[in-house]
Image 1 (cartoon, rainbow, N blue to C red):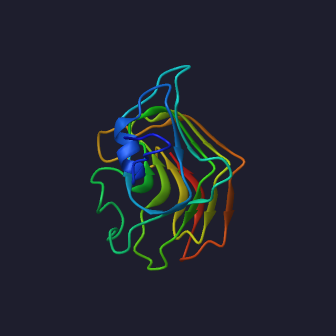
Image 2 (image 1 turned 90 degrees about the vertical axis):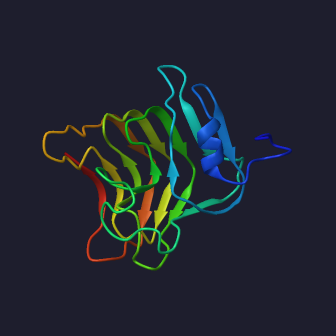
Length: 171
């Protein structure tokens, strides 16, 4: 039911239900998910996703889900947390890790196609293969994929893998 006593088992289920002003507290565990945020908050009513209390919440991409650049999410980059076109969302206190396979999303967090007022605060990103955050980077012909007012603060990126890693990509 999405309560502390009877929590949902996936972050995606919580993302599907969350609306402006809601705070989703994720309990300890390793979540192997590709989360697409379907809803936006509004000014003064952010949708907040954060770890519960002092719990360690690890977000890991599903193995063999990502087949290379732009294969999972046509027309934009894929990310473990994908907020394409969304606004007023906060992501706080998660531990993002790679899956060790090299088959990974384009970024840990993807904010494109008009995404705005996104706060990414107090997360760690370990053993990632590509970008920590992609903000408004990919522009197919004739389309604007800008993102704005993206706040990236108090995050820690360590042990990057692969041929290249970017902390943040933007255009």
